[in-house]
Each structure stands twice: as structure tokens, then as C-alpha cells.
Length: 424
Image (tube, rainbow, N blue to C red; front, side, top):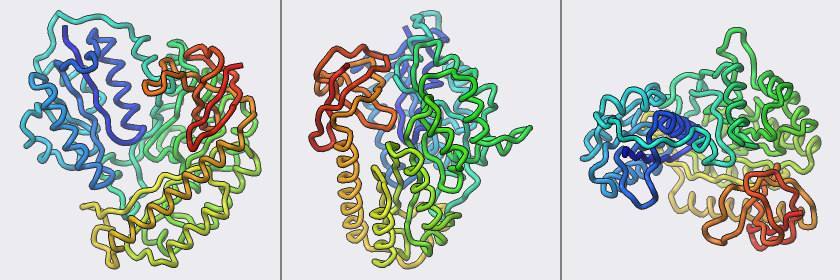
């Protein structure tokens, strides 16, 4: 019986690609390895967005090799793309697969690795589709932006889009497998459709999906400020299908730093977009990415970022410390920010983001909302957890929620960032 395990680091696109690999392996007749039991095949989908992510990728590869000494280990993802020779030199790695070939791992590389035989256990594709209650659907890959700090365009290549027909077909598959929510994702999702013939756009795809109504809920992942159009905001505001949740990369609230980052917008553009979302969709969760300590980030530049965030109805933050990434323009920039200063600024921003998130949660106490109930109980609390349209995780400690359903829930309390509720 051939058992496989897929291990994933990094972004939602990586997670979407790993889910696709798992689905295909199950359709081929392989089975997932049981928890704590060594696998016959281990696929490691790596990340390299920061130096820390590269280090974590190396650590994960070695951990998997130690835990699965007899396994064939296949390494793919962005770290394998940018540092293939480093990965090949890790004892126990059998094959390194670039990003362009990642989708062909089940069909090509497993056969070439000599692990195929007739002792395979069947597991339905439907079971594989249901493993995640909110699966990721990749609609776009690659990036043309070349921000000065970012290695991703070198790891992922130029922007390329999945055809609208393929997107709708995959949505229908997820619906037929029992999914109620899908998360649309891409490396630079706002560029969707510009490379297709005929050319289209993310706004066009969103309207096509709205018309088709193939899913109960669709959640949009990260979209750049200039690419969140009024058309998209207006459709999300009136559609019962699209979640009231936006995630927008800010990176810096200082215009000079944004220029050095090669980001194509200003703080005023970001302010306008967030304000427009809040005006049209007052209950929307609005998250932002902030990159702290970019070379040349003076105290005044940092304060500009903090001031902008304080002015806006931001719900939560993802805060990242800058680290120079070999192969990017910013790696050679002068005026580095001292490590201690970066750490202090990160702490302050994370505390700010935590306070905003908790305040957002508390505003919903007493409200009745629809939550998608996850299929399994939380392993720490033993409770079922649901996710609302506007990105509030609710632990259901009263009532009897039905797993993998959209359920009306009353939010009854908030202890820090833990929200409790009861099924109605």
C-alpha cells in the first residue's frame, strides 16, 4: 500500500497547488499516510519569500527525511526553484522539481521514481476534495511587478491566468464534492486575465462567477490597492455569494519608501480604497500587509505608516520584518535599519493589529451571523469552529452545529482573540 504525505510552507497559492497534487494522487489510487506513520512518498512544497522562509524550508526537508527514512522525498516550490543545487545537496532528497513542473508530479515524477506498484488503496476523489472546508482555487500564477524586495517573480515567472472556463469547471467540482466556500487565490491576482485571449480582468471573472452561482460563498484573497476596482467593491457589496473580506498589501504608508520598494501607488490611493470599501460594506473585514524596516525607513517614515493605519478602519495586520533577499534590488540598498529597531516596530504594529482585531470581534457580540462550520472539532478545545463571511472565527460552545454546513450563529462573547458563539 503506497502512502503519501504532502507538506506545505508559504502562501495560499502553494497550498492550492498542494491540494491539487493530493487530489490527483488520490484519484490515482494512492492513500494519505496516517498521522505519525512514515510515508512511502513525501512531497515538500517550499517557500522562499524571505530568508527565514528559506531556512524553514531546509529545516522542514531535513525533519521529513528523519521522520520518513525509507521514503522517496520530492522537493518543489519556490525555494526549490531558486536554490535547486542547495536542495539537491541535502542527503535524502531524491528529486527536485521546479514550479513549472509541479503540477506534473503525480503523473510523471512518481512513475519515474520507481514507487508505483499495484498495491494501492483506493480513496474517493470526493474525500480528497473535502479535506479542507474552505479549499483554495488558484486562478493566476506569476508576477510582473518586480518589487525591489521580492524574489517571487524570479521564483514564479511572469503572470499567467487560468481560463474562466477552467475556473468555473473547478468551482463546479468543489460544489459537487460538498464544499460551500472556495478561496480565490493567485500570486498577483489583480492581474488576472490580462494575458488571456480575449483579454479579461478580475472584475470580469468575478461577474462571471456571480452569474454562474456555482458556490455558496467565494472569498477573495490578497489584491493590490490599484486593482481593487469600484466594480469589484460594488459587486461584493450586493452579492450574497462574495465574502465581506478584503486583504490589501500596504507594505508602507510612506510615499518615499513605497517608491524605493517599486510599489506603484501612494498612501492616498490606499486610503481611498480602504475608505471606499468601508463606506460600501461597513461590516467588511479589511486586512493589510506591512513590511517593516525597509532600507531607509526613518522614524518619520515609520510614523507615517502608523498614522495611516490609525486613520483607517483596518481590521487586522500581517506584519513582516524586512530581511535582504539575495537576487533582489533591495539586497544592495544602503541605509539598513538596525535589527533592534525593526523588532521594536514589529512589536508595536502587531500589538496595534491585535487590538484592532479584538475590537472588531467585540463589535459583533450579540449579532447573528452565518458561519461555515468546519468538518472536524478543534483539537485543542473539542469545539466546532465556524468562519463568518467577514473573517471572524467562532467557537461554538452552545447548540449543536452541523459540520460542513452554513449555520446561523449568535456571537456571545470575546475573550482576547477567541470568539464564542451558539448555533441557532
